Length: 291
Image 1 (spheres, rainbow, N blue to C red):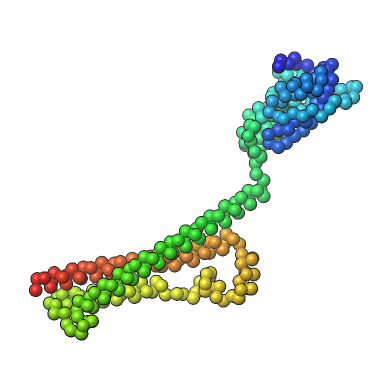
Image 2 (cartoon, rainbow, N blue to C red):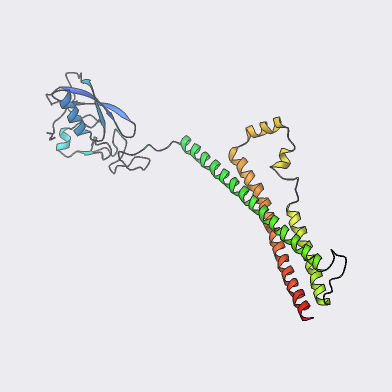
């Protein structure tokens, strides 16, 4: 559609009131000239290509209408003289002495005070309350994920401890049988082998003691079973009702992480002792073969 630049008040065609709805959710009313409703609708869609246009009815204007263009973006003589600029976000014509669109509040570069790019798919910037709620939600999710991961690590550490305990107990039983302790007689090994086997048995007993201590229940701490045991169902429910979800998950992760870390340290000691047991058994075997 081709348009001839002409002041709104000087256009002899009837005026029509229109409602413009913008992609960001804002809307406002304006007016445009047209021979009839359909002509006004087509001219409005050409003038505001990014807006959804609705014809409201004839524009009842006073007889002495101003000759200057309204801030809503009507085509005016000023456009012909190059004294206006067109907003890249909503296609509204703005006076050249203004650096911000009067409709969408964006500057000449298409950005508003929030620094967003203009465009049809743009969404409004979140408010401070929305930012705080989103940050709270992400924090709770991260705390819950940390608690879940700590609980999984705790379970895996218990499985490893059980495996090491079974290994140490089995080796100790084998050594006792080889030494003849279960039958009540001596094993008949060389002196060097007997010393090595004896030391290996001592180390295995130490392994069992170290791993057993990792299972020893503790009745201290700031959360978990020791604290729950001090409550009644009513008092515990009341405390949980006032608890902060992110702090509750974070405390759970800290408690589980502390137990897991303690088990890891004891498991390292147990593995080191088992390596010593293996070396002593090798010595005992060589001594027995060379005797």
